[in-house]
Image (cartoon, rainbow, N blue to C red; front, side):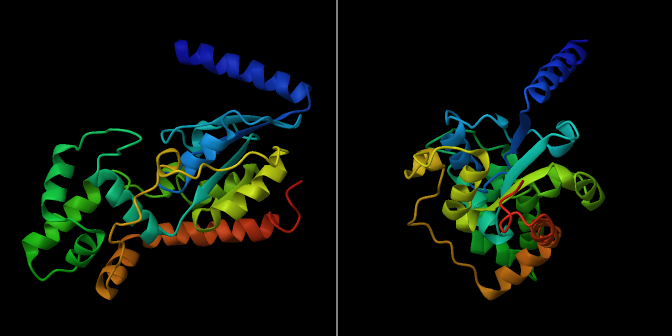
Length: 247
């Protein structure tokens, strides 16, 4: 009953927005892609008259958003995202957050102290070590989720393609955020946070190197996420997000 009332209120509110000539946009926060920095910058940013923003947590997925409303999000190379997620959970989300390890995470970090160790162990000839690596991949938060967790599958993403407003890339987040600001009519003075805490970045001193075997293992493990990235690039090309600056 409460959910029905909430859905009704949302429909009424969004109808009013449409009457006012505004489009509702939702930011989907895919873990470890720069979303914390984007939300920090936009949460109190003054907008132009065209849009209404909803900045969501990790739990909100594309299928939670009403058809016809816009979504935008950031993505990241799966290997870089894996490294970021590994170290974020190794320190239990600190200093910005504190989310204690699950029992499975505690076991994983007792055996693997770097992303490279975990990545290499996925092809270990030692059956026990290989199984521990697979368990770690399946149980460490951020490491164990896929982009498709937010988008269901390729058919559903293509079905909702017209609702995709913008896709940014963490590797070029500063440049893409400048472009996003123009789309949203956000003042030029709005900037991404530069400190590691508000940006929720890993310290620079960490060992982020991956050996050849670890890279091969992890690319195989995240092959579906690479397929997702390829599809995102195709959507960008088809919608000409960058060339035409989104209508």
